[in-house]
Image (cartoon, rainbow, N blue to C red; front, side):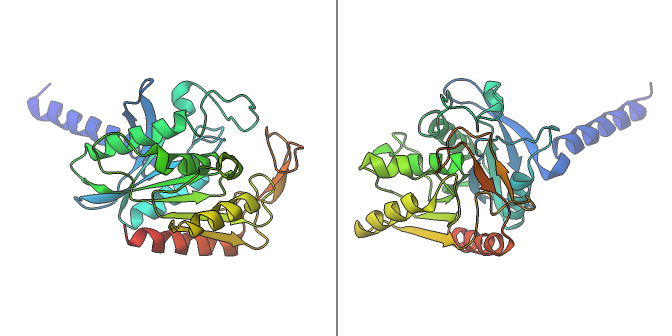
Length: 280
């Protein structure tokens, strides 16, 4: 085969690989963690950087839909944050360990307060090795179980032992606050924004309200927004309101909870997250 023809084939192959890697606007990457490599999704903004970054943690359902596509919530937020100039890294805590949805599992092996905190740290470390990242401008964001990990990760008594810059601020969508409240020792070392619906019967708002009020009396920078009429998953792009009966724990103790998009709360949350990250 002539040299030019071979060169053209190479270029075509590289183009196809690049297209596959960036399908849906994201790239699949692997990063080292304490118990093996983590698969992750990476959204990269336009331009050369250096960029501010967001480590985004999925909930108990994981990153992916049953058809192998990235879930709508994660693709929506990944694209949205990248458009605002953030490099977004979403570690796959479950798929990396050959696990599916953990929403109905009572005895978790990948716990929000342990293994997933380590995953968040591994994601931060990996980002800080990149030349296109501002290492002191990385935020931590999570939904539901990922939001619970955010609360565990930003405790003052869990300050990172490494000499790298810490996360700069944190956002938790409808986290489970009861565990941190009942610990009696929660104290946030980072500015935190929590967003939750007042009708959330999966991870209810009341414990987050109590947690926030106690933190504010200590002078911690925590802001809690409770949306009237909003349910769990209120920020999802298009989730119909429905009852789920396949979850391990719920506020009612029945294993049932109602989820669904709330357009007004979603719109407000998007604006608040953007404003909160603007100062990053």
